[in-house]
Amino acid sequence: MKALIVEDETKTGDYLRKGLSENGFTVDLATDGVDGLHLALTGEYDIIVLDVTLPGKDGWNVLTELRRSQQTPVIFLTARDKVEDRVKGLELGADDYLVKPFAFSELLARIRTLLRRGKVQQPDVLKIADLELDPLRRRATRGQSRIDLTAKEFSLLHLFLRRQGEVLSRTFIAEQVWDMNFDSDTNVVEVAMRRLRAKIDDGFGQKLLHTIRGMGYIMEERD
Ligand code: CA
Image (cartoon, rainbow, N blue to C red; front, top):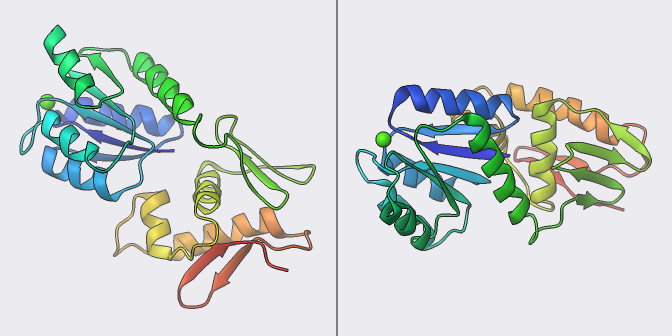
């Protein structure tokens, strides 16, 4: 699961990033509205936590522009408990809101509710051949065997299952799963891919993860 936090207050931003990371999210943090909107439009997020008062571009503008093309669930944070603010946010297309100060556990509960709601349109369990991954229960199985995955391996497999049949470059994978940028060392990706492949493909006749030389990796069924 990938989360974007758009929050200019360092303390709150760091606190949210830490909390969400500890709960299994890959987290990006933007500290102004311009960066926040750019990330929201280019990254693939499962949830966006958006502060309303932001430098550069306020939360309302970010939300308005985001909703022209994307339906990523958004929870906005407002410092004022004003009915007009809540109505405005929901009218602009936010899915939920929290009034500051709030307890992290409450934010997490709201996020989980939204993610569950979002799942109605998507199948809960992602599949290829006899490999299955259940993101909510955080379970992976191949045939009758349970596969034990680390948090990163889980995110990797989740990414490949969502993008079946597409060649994913090491750089793209690094950005999606590790929050690393273009200059990062992609050896980390190669090592993790080798471990993941050993876990899901070793001992099975049909291989699902394939290397495309010079380009990256692909998950697909081949005869
Ligand atoms: Ca703020």
